[in-house]
Image 1 (tube, helix red, strand yellow):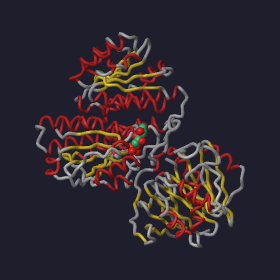
Image 2 (cartoon, protein in one colour; image 1 turned 45 degrees about the horizontal axis):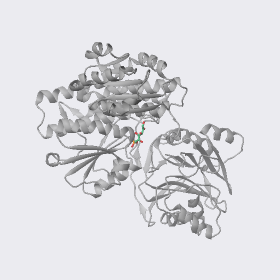
Image 3 (cartoon, protein in one colour; image 1 turned 90 degrees about the vertical axis):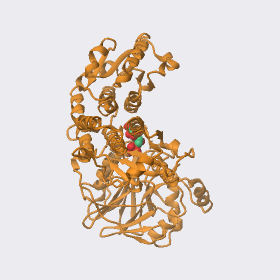
Image 4 (cartoon, protein in one colour; image 1 turned 60 degrees about the vertical axis):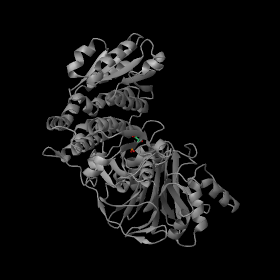
Length: 608
Ligand code: F6R
């Protein structure tokens, strides 16, 4: 949610900032801007619209400077417009800032500053920070920022530069991500690692309520009391190509094609011999045996993975489990205690709702286990135990490979808990392990069906509304299939439990309505066939996702069937989601939508 970059060194700052912003555009793309310091002036160029608009504007102005900050925005306060775009400047024009997050007490600060004669030209919460830093400035920028941050409530990642301090700029963070990239006589800040990878792999991860003073030659980190903080350097070892499209038309399709390798990377290193080894887990057998309840908390796609996790944990490990969206969990005073385990799931590891919900669970005494993709992210750092999903960077706003890997991690955890509780016999356990190991191949074989799915998409891209139905784990799967479609195709869609449709929503099914039906749950197969007949009787067109062994039978009533390799029902969602992702992708492509940057969305939601 909003991307920030900053640079100081010997290079021309403009291309460094623009290249960095391109890598961060997935975080927000309704406006963008840069501030570059040239001698004693801050040059600001900003614009509503995608980065391309800013790039064009920059071509027409002559700005030189070796220090600057940049921003790509996802609007929260004030519509996307030139005026509301960042950077924002202070009254005297000497201080410029970029901000990601929301300042909750900005109205009070605005009133205070208005009384002191400050005027505001934007509707943003951010502008108050620029003015307040100016108000607090007494010749030392770091001190002015520290004083200002102590007066702010809310979340921020900030880049601040000032005319009076041409050899340094300041960065700060609380509840929004920010890293510092360390180069040779040059340094960087960014909301995410890909923005700095062309220049350096050495990174400092800022903690909450920290301020960094960044010059070309050094970086000093302080807490909000102004005390120096030590920080280990984190070396980024992933491939730069991982954040490039590599010949694919979109990141989304590239990432769907990476699912077999991502799932393999998540599963393989954790199965040693026949045993599941969960990294450096500190959860003991005793804790698992005594665990009274598991809360699974996440948002969006990660929440949908959590719903699958709930079914899997209850079925395999026989521990009561609830999956809940983080923004609800946090504010309902949930019943949580030290005999509970809280699993949080997040691709980015920075989603503020999930982070806050995790803190709430911790505060109430629960142990926390994070299933996270981004190494060193806030959620990963704060959880008691972490199970990384080794999916590599996920750039497309619509999450795909992260979901399959989150499921893989959840199954590993569920099987490990079951094994440690002595609930699975050797034969059953070995069969699950074998099937998990075969998942990458199964997904690859589904990818081989893409043309059939593409053809189906070309016949249905004009649909006004599409329903997804399934029972048990297929209902959880349907929720994710439906979300994927909504996000990128802008077609209205709803997921329903197969048995629930007739209790009202079936009224919406009419001649030609497309219903995507999942039938991967063996014990519910006949029930789903019944549900398919119900919608067919009302004129629905049915696309079914079914195991190979059932394809013939399903083909007799469905209009089209996508076969997935046979597997145990409980593990089916890992591979069964892939055809639904492909369907959503092709529909969006045929409609001519911006697949990787769908309207109104942004990746990594760091505002509540
Ligand atoms: C959907 C999507 C979002 C995220 C959600 C949580 O395609 O990307 O629904 O899944 O915002 O994000 P993370 O997993 O980063 O916490």
